[in-house]
Image 1 (tube, rainbow, N blue to C red):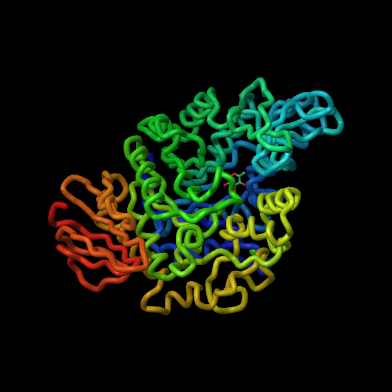
Image 2: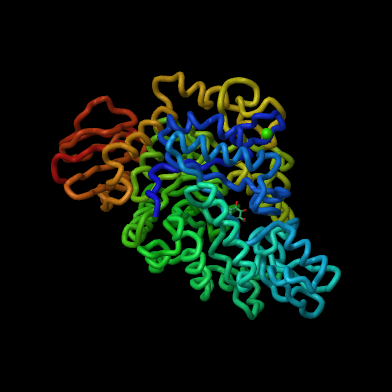
Length: 553
Ligand code: GLC
Ligand code: CA
């Protein structure tokens, strides 16, 4: 495999940088900001989907895998981006959406136009039962997971929106086409892929109805499609025929993979290089429902992160992150509003950044952009948010209550435009941005934070430089041991590789806390000036430090 990435930066192209004034970010915009990313010591860029798409789910509904969406640019722009990134020693990860296509994809159009076409079997069509769908599975975005084809009266399966019909992985010709497409991008020189919703590709083939779990009579169908037995054959085939020959780095969005199975997924001959673990980023969700959220205590988060690390370290290499395009902003999720300061956000950064695995930064996280202050449902774009809002109303919530219920966790919080400078629209666009710009952009933007001596952006640069420096290997693959677990509000761990040992300590509270620390040299601290630690040490509120140990703990 290629070298594992150390610091990956996720770009959500639609919201990153617009260079032609249409209010939508584009590939030329990404190229124009490569130096900004180089200054952040990023070695790998993950681009959320840039392929042709009607954008019902912002590119996660692909209508042509082999074309760049015109609003993002052209294939030449992508080639230029790959080349320009390479000049700066950065690799590109493309986002592969293989569980489904858009209903505007030629395969699906053909499947609908001619039920006898070979493309019909590229998707999952079934006869209905008693005038209704084949079963009572609910889609991830709400409502039945089946949509009726009015011409034949059959139904097709979509575990996401109805405009995202699921591909039939049982069909070898379909798989071959996907694999050829993937090879094409590897030939172009991308270093790998983030792989979308991959745990869903194998479906239970008898498609049974399940006991309803809500008054709508529907049931969460995950037990019939998440990491369903038989998926192993598809994943090994893809690894052996596509990823392995190219040494591609792959990070999978593979919800539902139990920790015991991680070796099979990310071990020596695993299906992927790494998988994202949602346990600690979805920890605030009640019953796993993404429009609910509760405040998480540091201790609870610590337990979850360490459990994840224990399993990941035993199996292979991790992919640690705080935010992505499906999450709300981390300062709103993990910090109380009064604690959402530069120090608090820097501490959150340190907390996850030195864990084992590749460290992912989501655009704007390094600026500490918070959730957007949504005032009206009309401001949202996200299909999932709008669906949840409607469900709220039909469950009897007032408009205000439904808005409140969805606003905090809406995926659009992460999708508002990047904040570059103090000009109108924060320098993101000269036109009208597709989502509103955060009102605090004057103080949060990169230009302002660059001008300050102390800012989150500057701190992230230091964090990332440290990850890339002398101790890079230790951070990537060294062992991890929890420390100071007897303290409720201390999030601390020790990393080790051979004789090198590094201690990470976060004081997760708004008051000081005294710890007895071993002697060592401070490599990074968000608040302290001194260079050495050791002995009784009073940590300031939200202080976070990384130190090279010279003494045993
Ligand atoms: C993944 C993506 C998400 C998308 C979904 C359907 O979860 O991260 O943004 O909506 O898959 O493709
Ligand atoms: Ca544009």
